Image 1 (cartoon, helix red, strand yellow):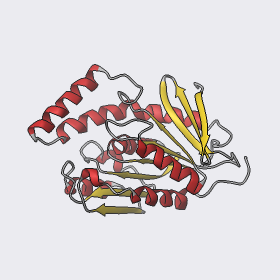
Image 2 (image 1 turned 90 degrees about the horizontal axis):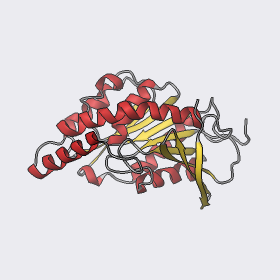
Image 3 (image 1 turned 90 degrees about the vertical axis):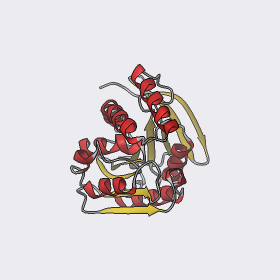
Image 4 (image 1 turned 180 degrees about the vertical axis):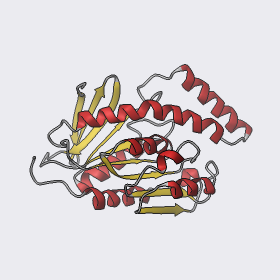
Length: 254
């Protein structure tokens, strides 16, 4: 097993932030600055065109750390952030820009591109989880969750379907086309958000993906507005969801 290498560290407002790399994949781990004891871990997935330090990732991480005492970690998806784009990435981006300029549906471009990213990213996330669970403040038997919307869902659904250590997940805003088979294998508690007036992902598509999850406990959060109007209070709801399903930090290291 390859080792996690921490490359930078800082602390502020009760949150310890550590940059890391694993086999060339860069990521960030946020933790309670106090280091009081073992705590659950939430893996996060960023959206398309974003990166590990996008404001949404930093904001979610701080909510999870300060609100629950959890650890939160995210990696740059292939072709995003500090990872170079491949020729395939460049071609897909060009096709997406052309479709957007022509007013054509984005799904036929985004769905296969995200499916390819998931093929690459799922093994990376599982390797990162292996390495993070070697840290004494996380541990091999600690609870693990996953949160990611949009592209974070395209990667997260196959990840959660393949990874039994993840016991609760938050998804949203993604086409179902490449995800239905994986969603049908997921039985852990799910919270799912969609925008009722999403101009990119039809309402029926989001509902089809939600319906496909085999989870006995799953909640649908439908908010008015378009794709970019996703309300920030859903991040607060996700934090409460993980507090219910992952528990709280322990008072001392195991």
